[in-house]
Amino acid sequence: MNNALAKLGACANVTSLKSALHMICAEYGAVDRLEILTARQGGKHQALCFLRMQSPEQEQHIMNSLGVGRFAGDLVVVVDLKSQAANSSGAFSGIQA
Image (tube, rainbow, N blue to C red; front, top):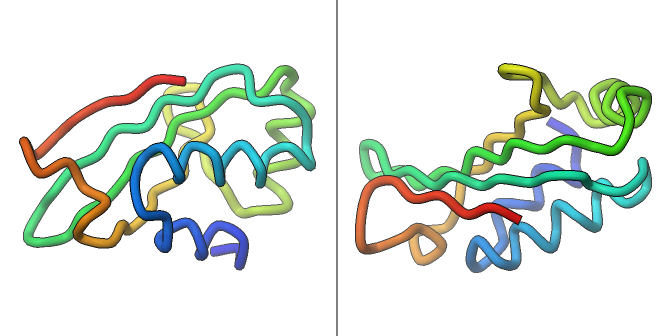
């Protein structure tokens, strides 16, 4: 994983994760859509970040530069979060931006 993406796990909450993703992607263009889903499984807290850029060229550049993959047409980044970053009220939640 790219060093910039590896640092995302240090985000204290989903709001800071969203901000960090926007900053990382800003080098490649504007984020058109970002959806973050959090899950807790086996004591591990993760965030699944689905994003779309304004152009396919920007998305391809992110894929090449950061090693980001695709799922169902979106770019996807999986982030292992600190325990306090997960939603304590349930095992799964979603936030759109």
